[in-house]
Image 1 (cartoon, rainbow, N blue to C red):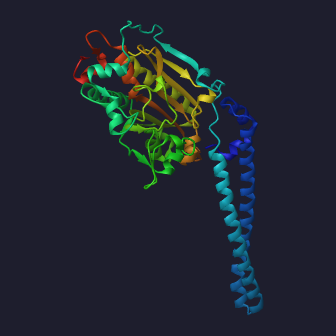
Image 2 (image 1 turned 90 degrees about the vertical axis):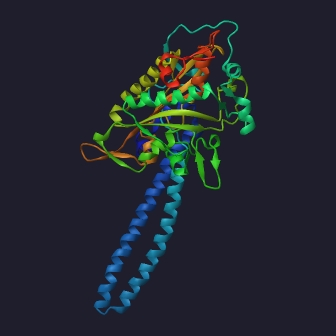
Image 3 (image 1 turned 120 degrees about the vertical axis):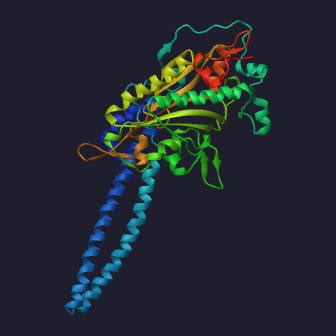
Length: 426
């Protein structure tokens, strides 16, 4: 959530930046509405402070007037105190309503794109920041997509998932299950080597947690909601792991704070149909290892680059061809200031599959979290938050199966063999 003080000081710059997200004048008016709501809140606060001051002053005078035998004046002062109480109650009610209105407006304003974010509306406007390697694998005409390979080797059953739950809930079995577990352990071990503390968080969160990281109200329709308990199934470990520091004041020397967590993730993905969502390309339940950092504002973009390199290293060890995209304004998430997507090439499908998003949220999440740190001057400041997928398993498995298929079976990358306990799926 943007700070009102920043909107006041940089309104025109913010308007220009939000046009990168495709915002037009009718939506940009939210910035003016935020300032107007804050002006009204400040005026009501000043008015209420005045009433409180008068009430306190009169309350002190009443005792002295009674002591001096000035009964009539004391009673008149008491009547004034009651009048002040009525005014205070009225202004406090208006103040609460105005504060709610201000927060509602602020919750509808996304983060400001970083200066390096390209303008654009759709994923076609994203910039390719890096390819590795540039020579993509070419399979023969008999190459199979992962959903056919899964059936051939009995390692993944999408139809059984439909029977048990519904479309988009895969069932892994046999060596498919062991491959999944191997990837989770590999990713967690690599994160631990990089200095991340491992967390096992809950899979359900309350609305405060979802709101703090920006999932609410922006992505409410994509989240599974447990109405009876007023809880949400997490769309990513980012939500519970980031909220560990909600309401905290940390020390400057504590940075960087590095956390990692493996969870299952749940996304409704309403309106997703067609070949792009076949097999593991888009599912409602999937496994993912997340990395999260809390960092000093002066170092967060250096940290973002380090996190991207960490994910790159995983893809290189898995021997998967990948590319890195710098997302355009229209493709940024609501809370992100700058996001890099990492995609792997699916040789059988001949298309790129997103497997990671690494983002810097600057102070957008920390303002909602009320996460601050004490700097060297003793001043309380908002921290910067960052996170990234390291990695999401579903599409990684799809690419591994497709790219490593041979006439003898599916070859397991060298980096995973000590985890799987086998070299080939046959």
